[in-house]
Length: 338
Length: 159
Image (tube, rainbow over all chains, first blue to last red; front, top):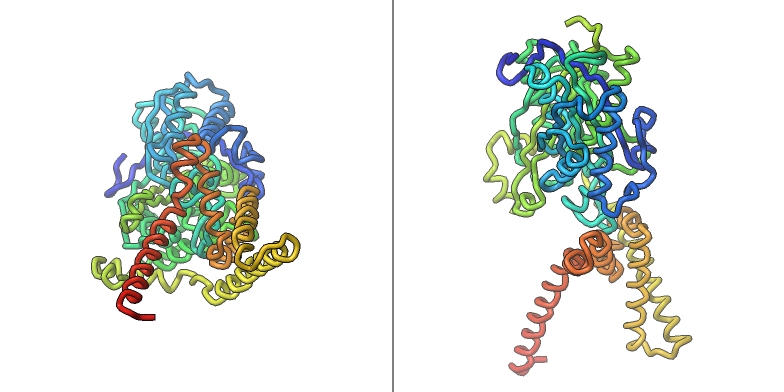
């Protein structure tokens, strides 16, 4: 189980039996739209508030994942979910609808992989047969809480990122067929003194690097062990910094292996400045895009390093720097050699 | 200010700040200035046009045309905010659309729209001046100080 300093190796290799990704209108126009299960034309989703819309996204992702596995809600022991809203209301309110035993988690945008790691841990230890890991974010709800009103005309710098509207859910099971969660590395909180909330990429890059480094060290692996190492939402700015920082630490990851979900999810011409961000960014790209590519046989081993900025609107107004975290989960194909 | 802040950072943090700084795209200051000049100029030209209209067709004088002109600009800005256009203009125009009165109207309207879901009193009423509040507070305060200076100078026999 525990290997090295901060890594779990899941001996029973829990299976991602089904996964679902739900997105909003901007994601529907993005580069990976075909890989998402449900796409909405309207950011309101027919609800009367953006907060309710986010809850709806999360509910749909969970229901879709359960449905795809051919299971019922009652078959799942625990729901582990988190989001960016104050007091993680989207998750708790979705859990109210779903009526499952629920563990609310918060790791900002790293929540997606934190949830997947914990779900795999529960299943691996026998504490659950089936556990559902989910995460969501909503562009407008997040802007409203963390920044300015959506329609406010403030000019954003080129380092700013676009919060993804969507949700992703993965059903982790003891039995069944699917890709397997083989290991997870829980990250440390890293604060390199960046305090600009419009430059999250630069703030989070050191956390991603620290976790990748820890993962490779704990498991004594070379980066080439993976076909893909994807950071969660560093965007173009943070991705570049992370790449250079890794080189500085003598970890050479070939550019075709190291990628970032925040860059992948949108098309180049979409006005998202440095790229996507938010819990749903890594959740949708992993559960929608990467798992499908694994299924097709294009990838056999991937490492998803979801990055999170653990700030609050209050903390940055009080001029605090931004503490960041990253959690890495290794997913391998069923046939893949271990 | 930034020096004081840097002192609190550890050596590794300072080193990283430098490391990241060279890898971060800079704000295109010159382009932003030019865009702000163009956009701000266009808004002011529209304002001027409206003022002429009031003076030519509605019998206002140069002084009395000020209020209805500002009202028209505010209405236009609020309308564009409500239709979801103003923020897109602003991303291009920057200070050009923020500095004129239209930018001020946009701060009030956008906050009011955003918090509609929390109700008319606590939502719209309570948050309407979330962004505009500081401008009003410090605007009135500085006007007060300037007036005090003027009165003092006049009392001392100046100007």
